[in-house]
Image (cartoon, rainbow, N blue to C red; front, side, top):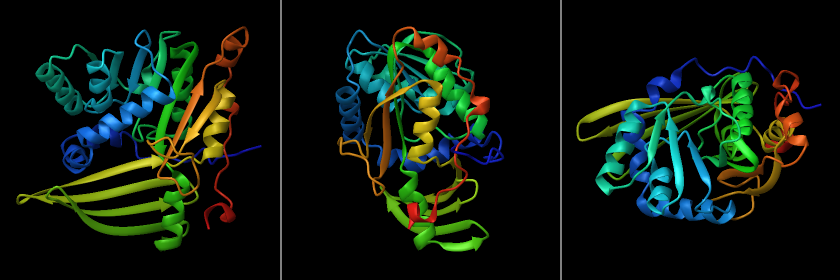
Length: 295
């Protein structure tokens, strides 16, 4: 049986504060229109998307993928909790003359059934909450999909992240590793410290940015699940795993991949209701990876 330390916790409600101006200042220069177009092309090809599909962009942020898919006449809704991000998304939609709906909601409160053909969760929008709440969120995604509906989840590859921390980082405490780097993107100077807690599988990214005599700080926390853990969670809930990718160009996943992108599907037929009632209380995930998986 695969187990996890259910005491694994990220700081409560950190995401309410951090997904705003500082995040946008740091990441937006990297999220170019060309990059967004390439990622949307990937989504369209691997799902694949049809114009009669009803699509939900879960954790849509400032609407990069939502806006591009809506511009291409796909029926998509963006959902996010951040007023800051949603204001940017709505302003951009109005500026471009794009008709699209954006909803403010805590994604954990998604409580609808058999509505969407496709749900996408892009650019590491999963793992923000305590473990049991992450599991509950996946159950809500499953319930929100129509039978046969597909879920595309895109997160950073935890194997590469943990390996770098353990092999290249400084051990600062029992089970904690830290890496520090500085770089600049489009005039924004960034100092980044990543701390990985091996026992709880929690990654903490602390970034300080400086630009035009201004500065700010950003703290991100996430449970870094392994591929085996994702498969176990998704399949126990009832999903079928259809495909696995390591980047937006469609290459196959490996432990050295930058991304971990999983395409799964809610089955059709008589087993759908039974699978949707699978309780997460008995779902367990391995507490920590064997050293041989990381070195």
